Length: 257
Image (cartoon, rainbow, N blue to C red; front, side, top):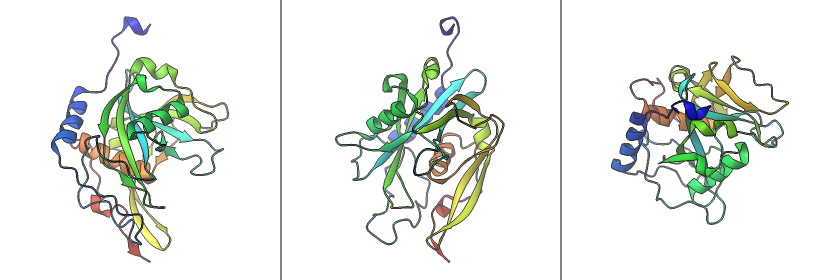
């Protein structure tokens, strides 16, 4: 059936913009040292643009894939996973596929390996666009680097969640993401943090495990580190559509209680 129709691709304009930003912008490191007490003060005074992919890898680094897809029913979209309730950490949270960089791996290799382990999509099924600036975790300040890539439409049927790690896989249209953003303030170790949060109801479930309770139309929240990376991506790639009253410098700003 796929051979009889024109397969959709993510907009050429978006890809061209990403490549232009990643090759013409100056790279400004902004991940603070994990050795200091001021590890997470603020990400940067400016939103970091995409960056070239040939930067050295820090010890303890992780990488995630921001998977882009284009579907006939919902157009340009971003793919997310819901973490399994069986996991020890961050169970049930919405995130991008990814994990820790292993020995001799590149950031891209780590992200695509984790993608295959989590949802069954191989590296050969993805068109990698490049990488964005790393974002530090609030727990230990270790850098997490978003890799941006497109999963080609003909491979979406290959998605199979790993029951031990993933509850479900779904896509959210860009149009829904750009109008669903808010912000949240929370405390951690007597520090207040301000971060973006996305509340979405319009999404398409591509695959889920037998015991998953994810139901289309029920609100899901994208927050934490995933929401920060998503915010950076949308702000650069869709500046005419996406606006958030939360100033970039407010991310992770320390305000003692």
